[in-house]
Image (tube, rainbow, N blue to C red; front, side, top):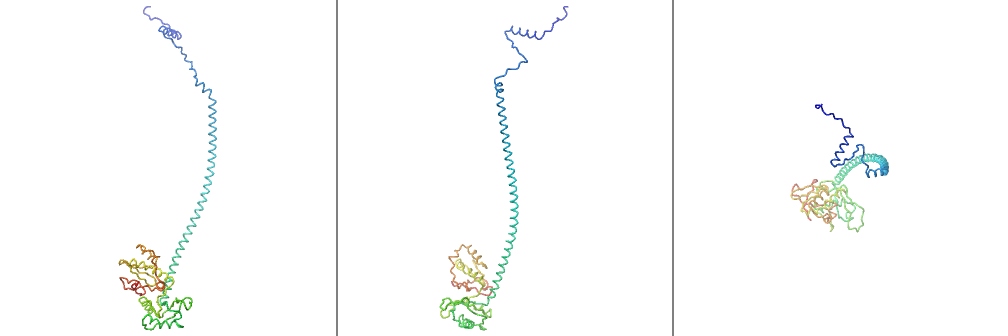
Length: 335
């Protein structure tokens, strides 16, 4: 019937492909046959890698073997380091025990040093007290230097009793009296030019002070052309301190300082109106060094008699009563 749609039969897939090919040929085109299940051909590189695959595996195995060996060497090194570390720990422990022992010994030594220092201080204190006691026990003594040997005859006390007042031109009331008097030191030959000193202990201390005062002002004295000096009597340590003080007098004079030596061994110094006392010669030496004075060796020109007996003539101080602790007067230097 004319009103009905034409009845088209379905076209199969091969037929469609054939019709499509004919259409392309009619247009001058050549169809390419494509097979969906066909895989692309293997190239040359793929074929070569397949051939080299056994060599690559060998290399990998070799690298693995090398790494394994290195790891084994590292394990051995680590084991060695562990052993060394243990040894070092044991050594450190030994060192620590030794250090602990040393610290304990050091503590013990410090205590001993402190004890020794305390004992040294006690020793110095006792030594100074002993020196002071010895000097006090010698306060009534005088030393007479320069009297020829055998001049005194057989009675030294009688000789001094009659000779001293005339020699120093001083009258004593009551007359001089001695507890003992004698020469000190080994006996010398008769022709010796240096007679032994005489040491005499007076009965009255005020007469000892009078004699020493006159001796400081007017010494030396003379008997038959012999030069006689009278000095105080001090202990050995005090004499050494006085010697050290007196050795500094040239420096004091050069610096135009006034000074005075007090009994038993104390140096008074004044500079620019400022006075200071020194009980230690080293302290005075440092004080003079602060003024940049000359070295001691080039200035030490003191004679023995100025040192042993203490007959120092010191500069007159600008202030005070002019007397030391024991009543001795400071005198002007005659140098």
